[in-house]
Amino acid sequence: MSTRDPADDGFPTLRLVAPDGAPVGETDVGLSEDDLRELLRLMTLARRLDRECMALQRQGELTVYPPFEGQEAAQIGSAYALEPGDMAFPSFRELAAAIARGVDAVEYLQYHRGTWHGGPYDPAASGFAPICVPVATQIPHAVGWALGAKLDGSGACALVYFGDGSASEGDFHEGANLAAVLGVPMVLLCQNNGWAISIPAEEQYVAPIAARAAGYGFPGVRVDGNDVLAVYRATKEALDRARRGEGPTLIEAMTYRIGPHTTADDATKYRGAEEVERWRALDPIERYRRYLLRNGVADDAFVRACEDEAETWVGGVRAELTALGAPPGSEVFEHVFAEPPATLARQRREALDDA
Ligand SMILES: Cc1ncc(C[n+]2csc(CCOP(=O)(O)OP(=O)(O)O)c2C)c(N)n1
Ligand SMILES: [Mg+2]
Image 1 (tube, rainbow, N blue to C red):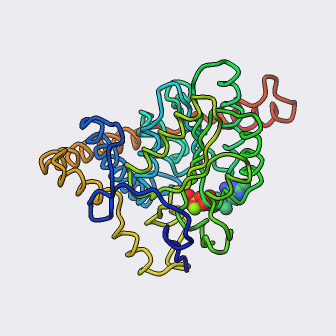
Image 2 (cartoon, rainbow, N blue to C red):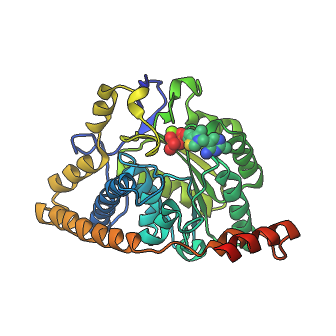
């Protein structure tokens, strides 16, 4: 069983808002009241869409789906700190971050519907790279992109998302070391949700993930990943640092996935209900809503308006997504070879002529 708690191992954890919504010290992160409300709006939209995606998969409208419920603050707090010209590199659970970046939800979800390979959104236009399923491979991609930004002198930064399990891959170590050596403008954001499918954190590593950064030669900070303001502040500081030319930062956001690993997983086989309930009590949206209400930044009407908007928006996403036709069969043979080898050309003829 996972017993991971940010307080367990003594590594300092940045927290600005307590689970009951009370401020912990100075909570001014430099955002306007409109921005503070926008964070709640985005988290509300994201959660509603996540739940709809679970339903869509159960109804046979999506092939497989990795839910992120519980990780809204970690994703939206970090993505919201990015500038338009920056590039986020997701793994496969970052739909909430995609929404915060303005990626079209229907285009993104075409990946999970199987109607397009990586989702047809334009990564350059949205500053959001394609979904990346081979775990941790997006980390070296982000280093390369950040090196390009450095050489161009563009002032843009890369933010790469990965999980606790991904931090055990060689690609993490190679990427982190190369990022340090090259001094690239990059933030490595680990969403530590306590599990890599059915493997709990305590069976994956011994020292805190954030502590590894010292070994590469850059700062490592840990935040309460269910505290959207703490995640925003840590990411903003890391991005500012990167833009000053001071190189990468590793952020470990302690969070939890409330749902299964994917719709193909039964999490009840390896974790108990009491663990899930413990984390539900630390819910990022509930916490932030309480914080905004007690500070008078939002009122009940605003909260309801966000929920109503989410309902209408998700209905539209569902309608558009389920109306999509199958892609032409010829696409299986496209986008890899400029000049297909003879064997592939023959298969293409056989498949399409018979169709
Ligand atoms: C290279 C590679 N090995 C194995 C897998 C199968 N796999 C998919 S997700 C996952 C665990 C990822 O855990 P973590 O990085 O903590 O992310 P989380 O799923 O918790 O968000 C594994 C092993 C994969 N996709 N890619
Ligand atoms: Mg994980």
